[in-house]
Amino acid sequence: MDRKLVADWIAAYERAWRTPGTDALAGIFTEDASYRQGPYRTPVVGLPAIARMWEAERDGPDEVFRMTAEVVAVEGDTAVARLEVRYGNPVAQEYRDVWIMRFAGDGRCRSFEEWPFSPPERTAAG
Image (cartoon, rainbow, N blue to C red; front, top):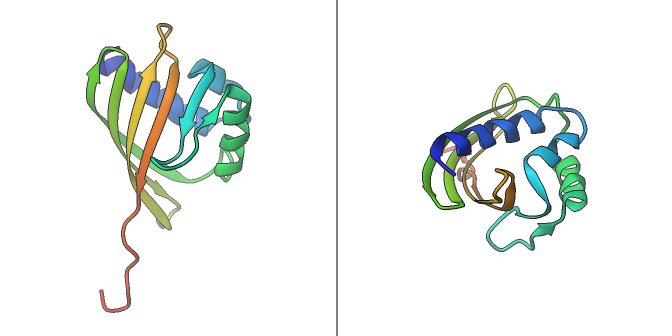
């Protein structure tokens, strides 16, 4: 893997999120991939389970969001990226994420781990 291939994979992930259904997942995840939604969460394993989680987590392909990504590091089959995702217009929810991805030889992800962070809730005073 290299930075361009990882950036292309992240773009394909975003396109899949914006596409109705889950057929696009087979192009970005291996059949036996694991997907961990947080460092302490149990991984979702296998493409059918990832597809069910995917549909449960998103509001649908028309969900309003903006995503930016920066590939931080790539070594061998492993990559790390920093992302910022803002949902809604106006923004109702936002995250800064770290993604750790391990890729199979065909460029699909075989292991995905997300470390999502959201800003602290604002109080009336600040």
